[in-house]
Image (cartoon, rainbow, N blue to C red; front, side, top):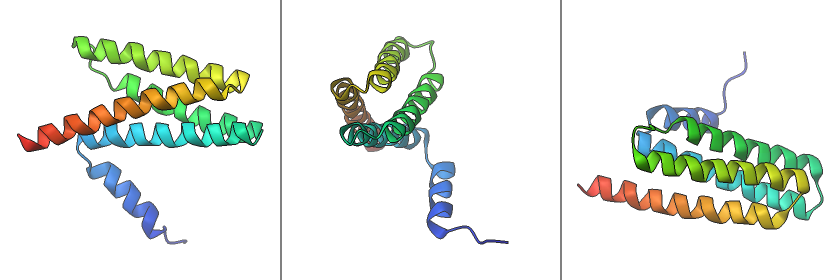
Length: 125
C-alpha cells in the first residue's frame, strides 16, 4: 500500500481543521489561482488547459454560492456577484476571452482582499 505524501496529508488536515472564515479564504485563493492558470493557458492557446483551469474555478464559485446563508441581505448580494463571475467564466472559457477572465480575477481578488480584512477584524475582537 502506497504511503500518502506528507504535503497532501497536510493540505487535507488544514482544510478539515480550518475555521469557516479560513475555508472561504481558501476557496477565494483557489478560484483566483485557477483563473490565473486559465488566463496563462489562453495566452498559450492551450484550449484543454484553459477549459480545465476555468472549469475548476467555476466549481469553486459554485461552492461559494452554495455556502451562502440567504437569510441575510449581504449573502444575496454576494450570490449576485458570484453568479456574475460564474457566467463570465463560462463566457471566457467558451470564447477564450482573456479580458473577461481578467475581469473575473479582479473581482475575486477584491472579494478575497475584503474577506481577509473581515477575518482580521473578527480575530481582533
